[in-house]
Amino acid sequence: MHPLSLRRTKIIATLGPATDASGMLLTLIREGVDVVRLNFSHGEPQDHVKRVRAVRAAAQQAGREVAVLGDLQGPKIRIRRFVDGAVELQTGAPFVLDCDPDAAAGDRGRVGVLYFDLYRDVRSGDTLLLDDGLIALKVREIIGREIHTIVLTGGKLSDRKGINRLGGGLTVAALTDKDREDIKLAAELNVDYVAVSFCKCAEDMHETRRLLREAGSNAHLVAKIERSEAIENLTEIIEASDVIMVARGDLAVEIGDAELPGLQKKIIRESIRGHKAVITATQMMQSMVESPMPTRAEVLDVANAVLDGTDAVMLSQETAAGRHPALAVAAMARVCLGAERQFEPVDEVLPMRSKIERPDQAIAMAAMYLATHVNLRAIIALTESGGTARWLSRFRSKVPIYALSRHQASRQRMAMYRDVYPVAFDAPDFNPVHTVRDAVQHLFLLGSLSEGDRVLLTVGDHVGELGGTNTLKLLKVGPHGIAEGMADL
Image 1 (cartoon, rainbow, N blue to C red):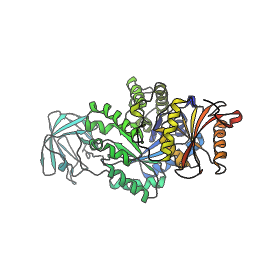
Image 2: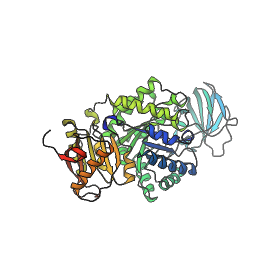
Image 3: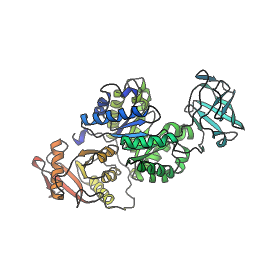
Image 4: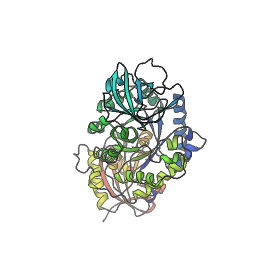
């Protein structure tokens, strides 16, 4: 695909019943999906096994590199069940949350909760938000294991809805027993990324990484920012993670809707400065669960995330259970392309003042300086692990980055990075001169480059060596795709 037609921002689609239809995965990938999300909150292990196999097969058929992200359920705090499945809470009425493990099925006056220590974490005067903030309760007093409240905002409350404390402060651990089992499943499925829900600090990420490595997985970690405590510890979480997700659902409930837009921009900006990829997620095109077209507000929401520099935008229920999964992906791709035509990198999303600690980081910074001062068609990164491509993508230029690697796992991970287009390439020998020539010609034959194009190429003196990128070449594509040195600019 020629650089002028490439979409820079990546699209993540959540798998579910709607994507299980015959041929749907192939359609979604052809429409532009770069990463698929397995939601471990739903489905059985055998469902996830089938879906991963189907994704790998569809990606191969489409000739695309597609990453798989396994999303851990985390300690979602929920109420238990009602006798009749749901109740109607009246504003001003008393309501009890029962933390007893043996609590009976609920009614209009009370319901059990699945987090049995909730009564230890709340105080009189606290506001508890249920069902993503649609129901609000004010805590009056704690009696034994019972939390006695008054309904501030009433409405219909059904089984197993989530609970948040306004302002955060719940002490529940980030990893549950189910998560630990799902980490083993993620390793067996050979997923490319694992997302940690409700992380509060760097230690949550370190523990998950340790468990993944013990299970034999080299998956990269995604920190989902959805607790107020995570905002307080944002810098250390970014350092401990590979990718950051702005998980706007529970985050908005904890901090309030009014604070969310500014925080989203801050998280994106700080993630880029910390050299980490960033995902913007939750209800980006929620109306398309039912509608074949997004609202204007949703179009602006996606576009603003793109303009802020996000690496990826995510679809959740829209593809997992929506009526129009393919249309949702197509609409998101269309909006991303439109916003990208208006994107101008600014200083606050360029980590140019960062301390240089590695050769590949220095090469990336030099490449991006040249990319802003020389008329280039593309940057070519010859990479083993994908590290050089990741560094290059942090600098947010308008030049596409073709990341050539012989390792499928590396190519799949790079599908997450903005501006990066992974390409399968195995050098016939480890001679740098031959490798450079063959790489440029390979992209020429794929139709990604044309005669006369100027390109930058990054490579190591020792081709095939992990972390060895130390050379930057400025080249021109000659007849038949032969790389030529630049006589002038």
